[in-house]
Image 1 (tube, rainbow, N blue to C red):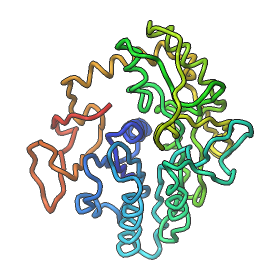
Image 2 (cartoon, rainbow, N blue to C red):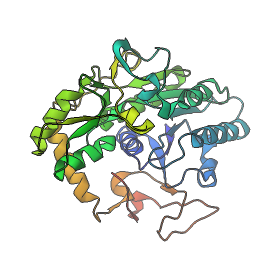
Image 3 (cartoon, rainbow, N blue to C red):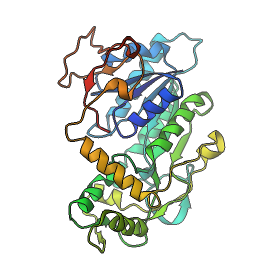
Image 4 (cartoon, rainbow, N blue to C red):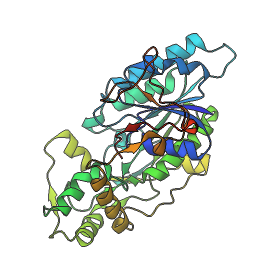
Length: 333
């Protein structure tokens, strides 16, 4: 299977790319600025799957539609009429369900998005209904482990003598997922993509976790001064962090046999906090070669982010790992 991963250096895209490699698939990680399709669009005629896993500072409101249309148009014009539709996996998020503190919700519950992601259901529908591609949506929950993702600032406060504080009020629950379990789901979806078209799949642990228990455990693990505090949200992002959900995803398990294997956030917090500390130290000047992350045959960087490179028609091909080439590039991990 040939897979293009857009956003392959991010907190979702990087584990997904690594999982694809472990599963033996040929993949092309696009890092840098994916809005320059000239560097990768020529791959579309022979691809099986495109995974859009954007994050960070990307324009998440407008760029996904642009990328979907770019891939769909290229596929329509360059692939034989007899070829199956290219599968396109869009990364949404669990916040499209909104808060649900009293009622259980699942993959197929009608959406009620919070303000911060009010535009996302439209992108989901555009992906699922575009007849030029085999569209699929994955909705990851809040990530934990590794570099801690959106929990980073909370861990930072705990580690530096600040207050352990979270947005919302007592009694909330967090829908969470570890990046490795999430990556496993992406691989399963990519492999079964031809029979999953038109589905939106929630990606979260089977049970949500009490936020109070997590905050208390963080104080114990980090040595921060308690008690923890609750903060009233003052903007859409803080409102998003305060989201509480009784989520019970079922499609991934029933259709793909997927089941998260990592310990939960609170249960495994001593390990995850230590992993965050190691990641924090690693960001201070540590560099790795792309080949240590991606054992594949081509690396595509769509913007010249401070590295010296040779290009051909805008394509940055960092060579073949098996030929012994390593190119240093500072990735976020």
